[in-house]
Length: 280
Image (tube, rainbow, N blue to C red; front, side):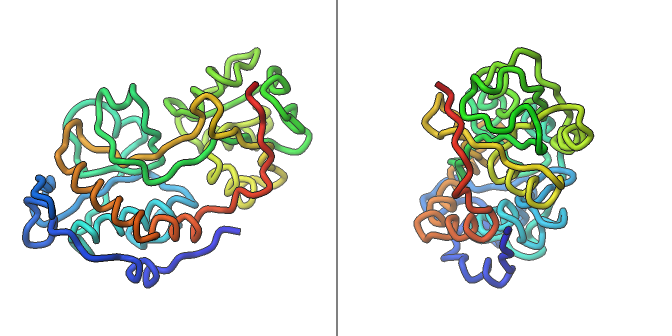
């Protein structure tokens, strides 16, 4: 079950603020440039809509949900709280296109990849997880223990994601995967029986099977050591934005304090007991 993490608990885990926000947003504790697109404000972007368990009730300002909690904790480390944190929305693809951004950083489960790094900059990872398969009972994917068992499965995934890449590059099914604009489209297709299974990150898979699609289950996850299949999520910035260094300092503080681990424990389901599917 997904556990809830209160705003009060979030505030309790916030540590000493580095001097990057509030009345002075020009430099961090080590002298780096922490300027934001709006003086005195930190503008954070996420998806439209934003889904659980990453953001609860499509309300990131509440701090409820793993990414909402991470974002507000980073903001606090940078010296921005309350009305000085501004939220905007973007599509998944829009944020990783080249060019100027209307946000300081964006988070909606962006995997750090060399291709994306050509057009945007990433922070250090704030979460690492495995790819996983969700399917309905009786699906052709049910009982799979290796990718060889998945060759005839009809897969779907969101466009421009590492999950789609994983299907084509690692699973390599006999038929081309169905591609959707977002995970909502992929989930609807699965629920309607138009595809056999979807591939998403493991926390999303656990939430989908437990809450969103009745009769579905997480068929399995893929090992982190297998062909670089672990997804590392990073905050997205305009290319070469110097704010990245400031945010990395904040993330390091949150990691060292145990706050990132607490957010993960509070919001992301335990993956214990999910079978591992071999890619050999």
